[in-house]
Amino acid sequence: MESIDKSLHAVLKEKSILKNEPMSKHTSFKIGGNAEYFLKIDTIENLKKIIDIATSNKINITIVGNGTNLLVREGGIKGFVIKLELKDFKIRNNLDDVYITVQSGMSLSTLSNIAIKEEVSGIEFLSGIPGTIGGALRMNAGAYGMEMKDIVFKTKYMTYDGKIKTLEASSHEFSYRNSIFSRINVIILETTLKLKKGNSNEIKAKIDEYMKNRREKQPLEYPNAGSVFKRKDNYITAKLIDECGLKGYSIGDAEVSQKHAGFIINKGSASSKEVLDLIDYIKKNVKAKFKIDIETEIIVLGDEK
Image (cartoon, rainbow, N blue to C red; front, side, top):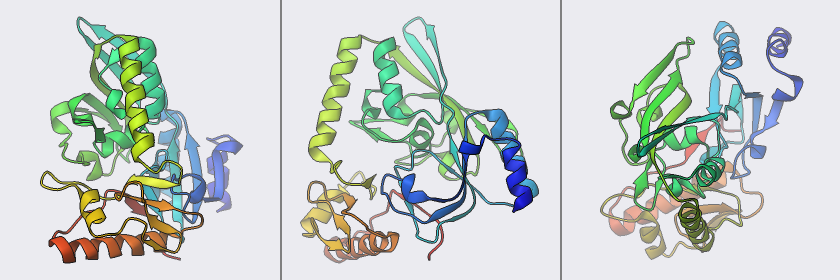
């Protein structure tokens, strides 16, 4: 490991290399064992170099954003956990259309603020979603009748042999909470969004309204990973869970939110096992009552302890 450390320090600053770093510090669930190496990378050049180090030493790579859709097991994650801190953006106007190219590490809240300042309409639905643009793209994030698929123009990504490629909108294979990036092992670098010119006050008013709705309906006062289960066209999963009488049901400190049955909250010191056991319990109850197999939306990483 000494040679690995030396190689990493030749590329990254000391503060960007964290060894045996608790993933509970880097997930909105506040749950998870240690990352063997947690690396913060803010340039594409350094990303290439770190991938080369990992490849030549046969080290596993895990890419994370803000950790808002993750549950990490207590055994932690071996190898390199890379947090992309690529956060630049560019705006190009073309008649009525506005194209914003955003790097994958930018938070959606920052993007919302840019939209207000630059008077760009079309991304209001993303406000309040606590992730990054890369995570939103991978999961085809959506709310209020809009999804990423409605605004993505093209995306640039890197393969694990360092090649940079571009994907046009029609090739993203978007579906509900899914995209091609859920199925191919590449690193999203940036995406270009096709939007419209708008009015700053109207954009802000809509964002404020959506944020207010989230605060009222979602358990934001507790650590959570957002909506745990996917909804389908013919049913709302949170409603099924509620009708099973599971609001407030808990296993240890993992609890089905009493505010929104689609959320599992960490009441204090919940473990990943408690969350996963609760997910299984919910699935079994919904299956027994409605004969429906519900699917999880959150991503589970890491080893069991």
